[in-house]
Length: 258
Image 1: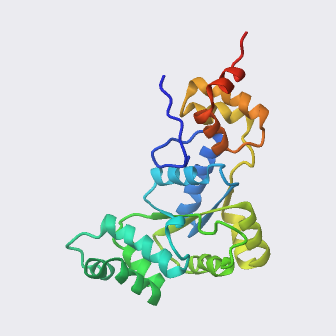
Image 2 (image 1 turned 90 degrees about the vertical axis):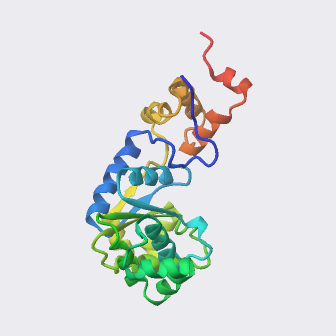
Image 3 (image 1 turned 180 degrees about the horizontal axis):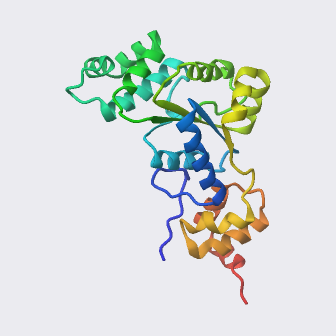
């Protein structure tokens, strides 16, 4: 059987997701985003937040935004890029939607101008082009709790919460230290997060190693257990990269000889 273990970066919309805890997280997030305007996916770096988000997108009508692609994380830029992707998907040439007209005439800069003036209206109007609920993934919105513009960016979550979009929900990925700072320093958001957060395991459960690895390379599942035994705090990313890039000598050392 051929192996297709992800190379760097691990997360990709082309890869499958394994592990009962991770698949349960997907199910929970789909339920939350179908009922609430926002959901939070919490987890350590390298534990699979982005891959879970991709799986949510695979099962829903979804717009995925990697915020590392956005130069400055402010409300206008976030809305403009989300609307750009909505219109690239739904904004047909014959559409009389007002935001679509700006998109066709002025491109991204026109959308950015609209988003600076009224981000809620711009996003709401663009969403009218979709005839079903849209999940908007914001991955890496706040990559560090030490970001000098931390509170400015966190304010985006306040704005999103208050947009009252009837046919959309935001899924925001978040590191534990970012989550803790928001909960501690911004009580209104912290009180909300309690009800809409799904947390991934802090470590890879031993009983789920085979499920995680088997979606990529079933014949290396037993090897993965040995790697995890040597480094029990390894993240999913570290485990898969170790399997993918393991030198032949170390590979032989870890395979039982009897």
